[in-house]
Amino acid sequence: MKAATLEEFLGMLYADSDAQKRFRRNPVYEAQLAGLSAEDCQMLLKMDWAGFELTCQSFERKRNAKSSRRPFSGFGSVARMLRRVFGHG
Amino acid sequence: MGLASCAPVHRKYFDRMARLVDRIEPEAWSEHLAFVRVGDREFGHLAAPPRTLANVEGTVANLRRAEKIVGTRPHVENIATLLDPPGSTLGESDWTRRILDGAQCKLLFDLHNVFANGLNHGYEPTEFLRAIGAERVRYMHIAGGKMITVPDGTSRLLDDHLHDVPDPVYELLEEVAATATHPLTVILERDGDFPSMETLLQQTRRARSAMARGRARNRERVETAA
Image 1 (cartoon, chains in turn yellow, orange):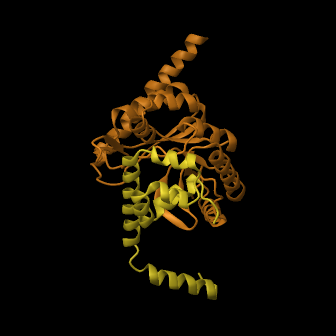
Image 2 (cartoon, rainbow over the protein chains, first blue to last red):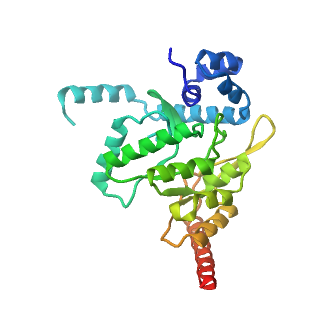
Image 3 (cartoon, rainbow over the protein chains, first blue to last red):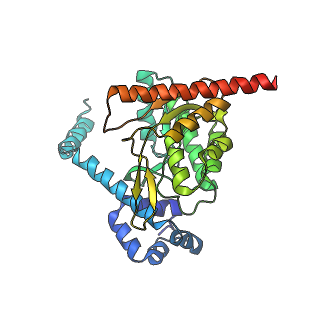
């Protein structure tokens, strides 16, 4: 597996609530598992954890708000797929 | 789009913007200096990436591709962040300036974002302005936010666009006008909890007054120097 950069790892935590939970339980293990260098692991440990929590919560709220605003997204996906197949719209 | 990333932005986002720009022919277009996804997974909002030289290089490459495909350079906007990104080797102003220089872009300067970051991460917004240089600013956003208390007992300023513009933002607006000599456009942002139209108009009047005070200082400075 290709080693993640710190940007990719942080992005993965922002995008995935389960990955966040695993990271909170064992940050060094998860960072090492992703292939981060020892230096990057240290930087993560020294980060502002309260700011990290606020950021993750805010992103999750926004993701949930966006998905709740799209009640018929399943139908929309089907319609988009049909348009692609038949070339209309 | 997620331009502020080591990863190249997918072509489809530039194509969409190109179609929009072709259709409405705007005076300018802008995008935030943020990363928003990893692979195909979206975060849901704007995130500050670790501010490194590698990120500057990736962001400049993304901005150049944006210009090539869309046809015009975007203005880039500084974002508010509750987390000072870990792994950063550059300060926010240095990182922003390097990107503006590398991509030859102008700044859409969000004054409340820099005020919030300054308060939350311990720097003076005027230092940021000095490091960037007012000549790089073309547009400005003004907005408001609220203080929140976090579990560790400390407070943060949240840029929520739901509150009135605070005094320090008008003061910063005056500072930009006091050092820039070119035309500037100011946009009041408000996303909800809307007050009366009169209150909103009053905020635009305060912004105009701040601009006028800054411009007057600027003229005075030029006359004194001459």
